Amino acid sequence: MENNYKVFEINEKRYIYLSETGKIYECDGHTLNLILMYGNNCLLDKDDKEILLNNEDAYKLIREINQAKYSTVNFDKNEYKNTISAISLLIVQNCNLRCTYCYGEDGQYQDSGIMDVETAIKAVDFLVSHSISQGVSICFFGGEPLLNFEVIRQVVLYCHENKAKFGKNIGFSMTTNGTLINEEIEKFIIDNKISVQISLDGDRDTQNKNRFDKSGHGSYDIVTMRTKNLRVKGLLGVRATVTPYNMKIKEIYRHLDSLGFRKIIISPAFNMMKGNDFLVLAEKYIEWYKDIENEMKQNNFSYVKKAKLFRQQMKKINNAVTRSSSCGVGKNLVAVDIHGNIYPCQRFVSLKDYIIGNVRDGLNKRTDFLKTVNSNNNIKCSTCWIRNLCVSGCPFCNLIDTGDMHIQSNDCCEYEKKVFYALIEIYLRLTDEEKRFILN
Image 1 (spheres, rainbow, N blue to C red):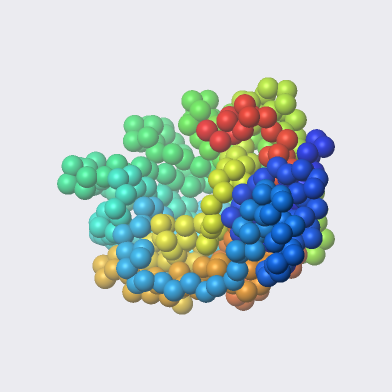
Image 2: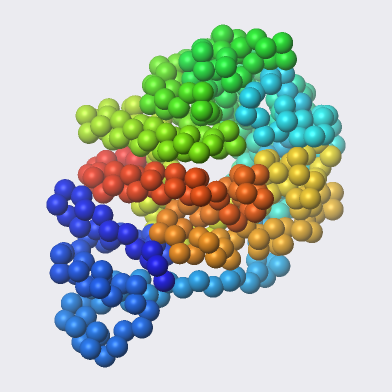
């Protein structure tokens, strides 16, 4: 099988990354030469084995490399019965902004409306009954969830009143554009310890180009004004969406850092990228990651601490486990629309063919979805060296881009390979102290 490993040379040391398991080994020149000769040979003859047995390290590594093989996965319908630990409630399928890249069709998901209290409470009961986890989480999502603040209030109150009966620790989060935050909402967020993520794409020009209201007025000034107190208190995270209009990721991060957000996520709008955009995007992400590395080498850990995506990727590289999906989509997280229909995640809500259940009736199509998105059943990715890091990518993005949840576009594949190669190089340059900081 091709691409079962990748070789890295960092600071005059040689390392081998094993594609199937994600493990990284340091190896000497002789060991590496033997791996290059035999690492992709699934069958070794007697003479080969005698040569390799004189180098125990090479023999063990080559055996591990050659144990990797493509196989389909069978699912037990009860395997994921009680694994749900997080739900996104689409409190409102409508929005007061008209962002250029919105995958939810102006937040409506082709079905405008608001969630009523009864449906929201049923969703909470569904979560509790389908989870064996001690800790579960509810994310208030939209559209713009604060257009239906009263239902958010009722859900939080219901959870507090029934905490003893549920026997769960329920955490709350919210993704909002920030334009509707006022003193009352701010107090509610603080009193109930709701983790809030604001959508802000960078400086005034970038934000106003991407995120504006129905009249075309940019939202930068109102968002920064209404979120000031929460930012000063260190209570807000932020997510910036990168578009072809502005891919200066390092500059976006530094601007958001200057505004006092406690954590920063910078994520591409892949649906807006075409052709050469992917090459530029990879270059800009790598430039930003190297900037973070440089700040870390100068002991500026406060700057690095906020870079959530970078730290997530470092943890993924460090934690050598075999993965079957890129995220918890449909497995430990689901989304609930205004009618109580259940989807694998919030991105699928506009696609009625991907309803996997309802909060009133339970799940009935979940197993079929999980079979489909499991990367072990993906022939294209089975021979890719980053298959255990990319794990076939986002199923929704793939579906929109190529028509198949399994298949990423070739442009996106090349982007992922370039970025992960650079990330592994950075990981191998980190000191033990730096790794401890990143991984905590």
